[in-house]
Length: 73
Image 1 (spheres, rainbow, N blue to C red):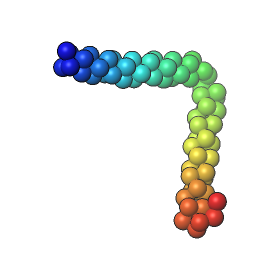
Image 2 (image 1 turned 180 degrees about the horizontal axis):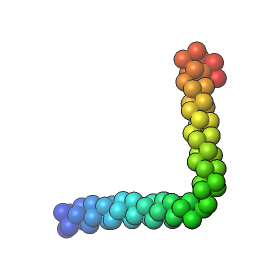
Image 3 (image 1 turned 90 degrees about the vertical axis):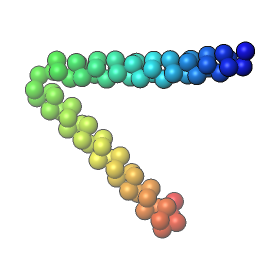
Image 4 (image 1 turned 135 degrees about the horizontal axis):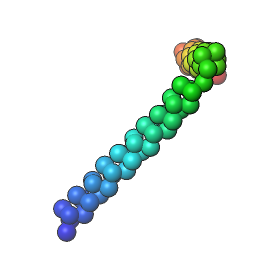
């Protein structure tokens, strides 16, 4: 019984991981499809906004790093 239970636990964990991956892939595909439906000028706005978010994230990361190095929160 112990080996069967361990197999079942492992199998269910792998199914859970697969479903999370698959759902994430579907969500991203939907986002990509929506972006493709936009006219070129709006696609450019989306790209600019994503760049802004990435830059903001990097700046926050730099501040956190500098704070941890200097000891200042």
